[in-house]
Structures are given as structure tokens and as C-alpha cells.
Length: 240
Ligand code: ADE
Picture (cartoon, protein in one colour):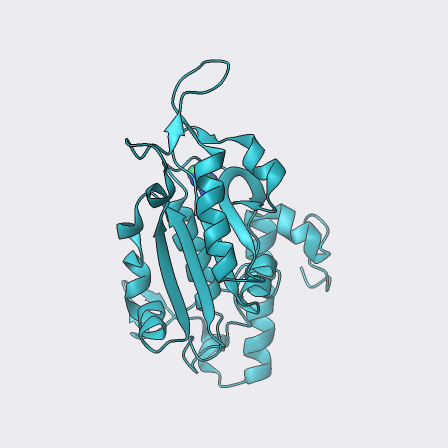
């Protein structure tokens, strides 16, 4: 069963966009995932095909209409029973690798992409929609965030990522940031590859990588470090 991605958007031409190339593009061509980009405007009912209106209570910008979005969502959900519905918004819960993994193991995702100032609150009160944020900054719409979410899911689908890496060593899978990588040439601008990586001693290399991952996590992401069980200034193993 392939992962069914449906995006509800005012800009369906933004899809698959970058997901049409490289790993995700090949997987799409191979049917490992499918994409349906639905034009929200097709569900408008007035002669101007309007999807938004001025905010109740006044203020700048426009608000997306609950009735039009509900029509688009209900039609989509009926075609995709059991598929979770998400909307991308800076006020959502922060996206985590755990949520990505969980979505990738499921039947797919229906993703509602907001534009303008936001979406009429009554849609969230009347439908089951998970609000997801990809970070503490504001995009001009949910489409880029949806592409990000889908990219994160697709690379985890069976047979998508090359045999070279299962991804198990990567940041957030281990709970740590990744250790530094090196490749040839052996010397570049007077800088050499750490000796341990040329030792062929796999146990020493693994220990070195673990120490490096711990050190960089402690330095750059004290929040992750604490969740990992480290105390400020010390690694969980007490190695540093
Ligand atoms: N839409 C606009 N900004 C966003 C963000 N930071 N995350 C998810 N969706 C968004």
C-alpha cells in the first residue's frame, strides 16, 4: 500500500515541485507514494469563486472561509477514509521526527494549506484537524511547510532511501545531532581528516562519533541534550 498524499491548496501548481525530483520524485514515479493536489477554489459556491472574506471584528488581511474549506475537506476525506487531516500553521504543535515516522507508517496525509491571515476557527471546532508548525517563523502560506512535511515522510517510506543509509544514525533518530562527516581528499587547505577515521578500528570510530555527537548536541541544543538524559556540561556516559 503506498502513501497517499493529498494537499488542499490555492496553488496546486506548487506540487510536486521539489518532490518531483531526486529520491522523492523517483519514488513518486515508482508509485511508492501518490500525490493529489486539490484546488480549494473549485469548492467555492459564489460567482466570484471566493475562498476568503474580511476578518470579523476588523483588522488587516483576509480569513479563509470555513464553509468552502469544509466542502473541500469533506470531499477529500470521503475519498481517503482513515487518512489523518493536518493543517500547516505557525500556531500548530512543533513537527517532530517521531510524528513524521508515525505518519510515514500510516496510509498517508491530507494537508490543508492556509493562506492569508488564517482560517475561520469554526473549521477547527467542527472537524478533526491536527495543526502542525515547522518552526517559529512565518511563511507566506502552508504550501512550503506541506512540502517539508511530505519530504520528511517520503524519505522514510520502504525502499525510498538508498541502501547506503537506513537513517538510523541521523539527527533526531538517535536523539542527538549528527557527528561530523569527512571524505577525500585526505588533506584540504592544510586540514586533515581525524586520524581515528582512518584507523579501520570500527569500535574506536563508533566511540569517537558518539562522543562528537554528544559534544555538538550539548553545545548547540541544550534542550535536546537534556531530553537525551545529559546534564549541562557532562555527557550521559560521563565521558566528557
Ligand atoms: N504556515 C506559515 N508559517 C508556517 C510555519 N512556520 N509552519 C507551518 N505552517 C506555516
